[in-house]
Amino acid sequence: MRVLKQVIRQGMAPAQHLNYDAPRRRVGVQRCASLENEGCRSRALSNATIRCGHQKTDQGDVMPIIQDRRRFIRTAGAVLSLPALAGVPTAGALAQAAPPAAGTGPSIWREFATIAIEADRLGLSVPRMSAGVQGGTEFNELMPALVDFMDSVQDSARQSSASPADVDRILTETSDLLRRLRQGERSPASDRDPNTGAGTAARPTVASTQAEYLELFRTCVIRDEHRAEVNWYVGKLLEPENRSQYAEVADRACVPWYFVGVIHGLEGSFDFRSHLHNGDSLRAKTVQVPRGRPPVWNPPSDWISSALDAVKFEGYADKPDWSLADTLYRWEGYNGFGTRAKGIHTPYLWSYSNQYSRGKFVADGVWDASAVSKQCGAAVMLKELVERGVVLMPA
Image (spheres, rainbow, N blue to C red):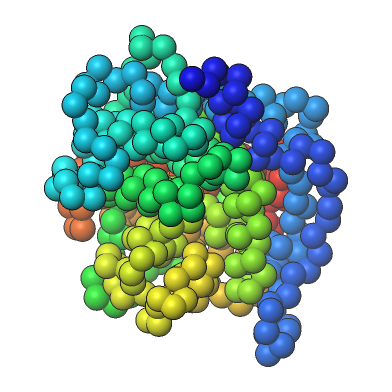
């Protein structure tokens, strides 16, 4: 049985994911990949100073992520100590079992525990904790545990004797659990045609929202009770393997890398087995709004191809202006402007900050004034990136 030190060494510690010794580099004007788009320049990209997240101080950006990983070990580690594990089916039997309703936390913990036991049997890295630790059932407790478990499995697969097919099965089953969990939390696009994905109501203009965005961003303060969660989200954005994929999409579509990464966190929980459009599985075209994307699929069936289609479908590719107001406007538009009619600032941008308290769409066209988002907002992630000095604030 692996001890905690081994778990940290084999994939849970942030040092394995963030290259803290990488040199600081200046990113100049980034051009689109195609020659016909030679003139396209992204203002945000041309002004962005990209760093590894540790440049602010020697320890200031490292320790919060280390603490967040310890938080994950406290929660995900409980996966092997749940009292209800007696008699659970094998991981392979999950495919034959009828899945419970979306968002049922205790059931997902139970199935997660089964997958973790199978992963451990295969020699893959799985955290172990004492039987006194209990896992939470809320989205903001389960989601990071599932995502970091997948990262740990992928990292340890390189040194284990598990076959590629077994590793793929473990990751696919965990990804499906994550997707089911996300369905219970995701705020559906509130002003989209279910077939075409096009907006169904008049949308505000960037000019009409610019002053509002700038003031909200200027006065945005991350809530203390969500600081660890915000650090976790930003840590995922900065992981080198993630960043490299965001950068490729950014280079080919001429958009800021963090614009892509933030959408990936909100729509797909940083799972590269999910479409950027809405988090649906890459195994097929999208089934939620927007449906049937990409129009040509399987092949190809990779995340970057899907992400490029999502960015182009929304009309964001090759845009010359990525000011702060434009960036926030496009993020809000990605999810929909329906919350404006409810008199609140959208959680898609402002969740986990002083600019949002409660209220969200819980299903297509279904508004719940008391529901509280358990995802970090896009503007909040950008605020943290700016405060760390990872990117310069867009003009």
